Each structure stands twice: as structure tokens, then as C-alpha cells.
Image (tube, rainbow, N blue to C red; front, side, top):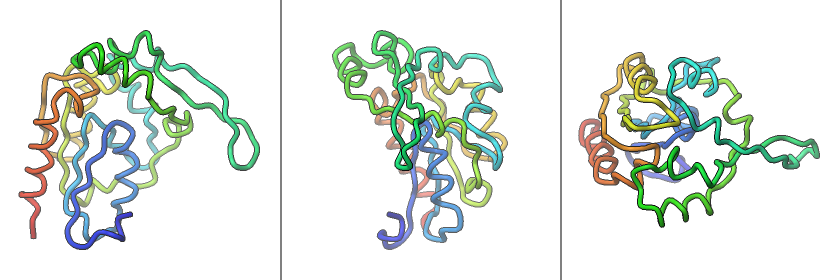
Length: 186
């Protein structure tokens, strides 16, 4: 996807999307900034499980419901969804009840292996980065966000929001992405 975009690129990722974008951005000279929105910044060799165990406060894992699925090679693996009964409280506490119920009903499962796989790169080491920390996040606690931002020498922006900050505070998310774009324009 990045190869199809001409000119400078600011990548933004939410939650485990930070893990994905850090890998995708590595070595791409067109990526001028990374914006981690209530997201993970893993070191090579470090998994998302390793990160959530560094600081207390991550409660979302306890609401994860495992389900088996068949992989392309025919083996069975595990994917996770958030218990709909706990979704509003643990994922989207600052989102209205109707929207949170819709989010819970339409959530996509996530392969457990995505949380267990160690990072192979850390693009934030060489690309200017911003971390938007949701201080009421039950998935990525604020102390963990601060730790990751500090070790990445990233610009830290904090907002009183849940993990669903993209829904509850799109104004702050947008402002942070625009700040990153303006600061890294060539």
C-alpha cells in the first residue's frame, strides 16, 4: 500500500496497528512521521504481551474470548474478541451506549499470534514519532504509553479518553496527525 502513495506519508496506527505500521514503515524513505494512537511501540524481540505485562492496569485481556479458526495451512489457531458485555466499560467507556454496543457487535477478531509475535523492527528509532496516550485506556495503560513514548523519544500527547479514542476524541487524534505532518513536511 505504501508503494502506491506518491510523496511524503504520515502513518497512524491504533492499538496493535502500531506494531504493524512500525514494520511497514521500516526503511521506507517516504514515511516522514509515525503517529501511535493508543498504540504499541515494540522493540525488536518484544511482543505486545511483553509490553502489557510491564505495567499494571491493562484489563482488556481478561475480557478476551478465544475462538478457534483454521489457518491457510489447515492447522488450528486462536483468535480473540472482546466480551460484548464488557466491551463498553473496558474498550469504549467514553463512547455513548448505542455506539459502543454497535462497536461490540461489529468488532473483528484478532489472531492471538498477533499479540505473541515479537517485533522484528522498530521504525520509531529512525522516524519522528508521536504517541497519543489515552489516559483512561484499559488496554494500554497510560504508564505504558508514557514508557514507550519516552524510550522512543516521541512527542507525547495525552488525552482523557478510553482505548476508543478515535471514536470519542477524533478532534485530538486529527490534531496530532496534522501536527506530525506539519512538523515533518520536507
